Length: 159
Length: 397
Image (cartoon, rainbow over all chains, first blue to last red):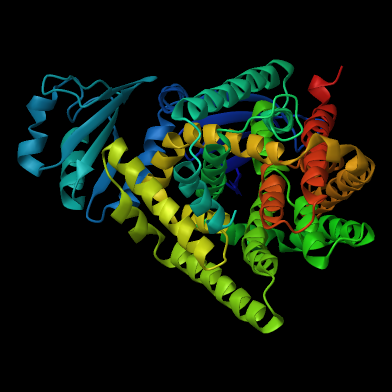
């Protein structure tokens, strides 16, 4: 999806895009942090036919609803920002590795210095899972640390 | 608008003291009238500026209930109102907005000046006004009301529309041009000789350029120095600096309003965000006083003779702004419906036309300027929003 960015003087930035289904929509990010979701008129490409005003909290909640991908995008950003920080998504295998075992069993933190930051299971996320958290096959595990540590942790997780 | 006015006004109560009670009573009445008019404007869904002007006409000399005792205080309040109006206008735009605006809309900006300032200037000359007074009239017909327009765009859910950045960029452009022209007008109003005038205008434009330089280069540093966690301290600091800068600007003939605008542009980041949330109530109170004060200075009996030319010029003003917006939107690649929307959105004139007229009225440059500007702004501040709504399909009857 292509996203076009336009500055709106005195207000903020507007991003507009066309979805795969052909709907045109946009997001206005205002300087005070509130956001508007804008739906464009199919007959008049320039006019909004509907606007949904979101507070910062509303926007965060909707971002969660719209799926884990937002987390990935944000982390992608983070990776650019912080040098020496590696982040990886690891998908738990059917068997082997730490599948059906807990975080404590793997001793990832002790052995590699990398951390399990979050686990996405199906359509919900577990941020900051505790030591007794049990991995299941198909879990997406977010690992963070320096590059070597993340590689080592991946080996432990997937066996 | 001149510093003498301020000094005279501050000194006045000592010289010829109306009792404190009288001043407070009249000030209270004025504010209550403002409140009532504001409520009425909200009820019927129009901008409060034309109603404030009408209120001023009723309370001023030759009005229904002429007020006297509070005059001096209202004059100072009005001056503060102008300064705060322009400070917040400057705060709306970051230096980047100004730069991007200049870069992307300069062609439309040229059309804007040619189509909207020239008719005003010509009309002034035709009416037999001096070139200086005609130049003021050009400013009055040129500058759209960012206050009214921004409010309407937001009320009508047009912030996300694709033509909206075009409209806003043009408003930015108008403000920048006004920032350069106002000091020159201020110099002309003093009536200096050509050489003196050229020198003063050079100094004035130098100050404006310096301020823009500071805005672009040192904005972040200035903002950091001013910032404070305490709202009270931040408010005191910002108001203190604002009045000081505005006063100094006035002293070097740049006009207090321009000084405040440039200061607003210079402030950015967190300070700007906080000030934007702190100051609007102050601006609305003192800005209201400003519009009333302007109305008070206009004797309603001087209105009828200028009514016809003012309305004729207002019709030209509608046509020229619609054309400007249409062309600007076309340049930006907006579709037909959006071009008309952009055109009608630019029609309202308001606070800044009155600010410019106020400069001329204070300098006594042309007796018909005040009533003419009042009639012109009354017409377009009311007609503009109505025309704008008419282009809004969804709200059309």
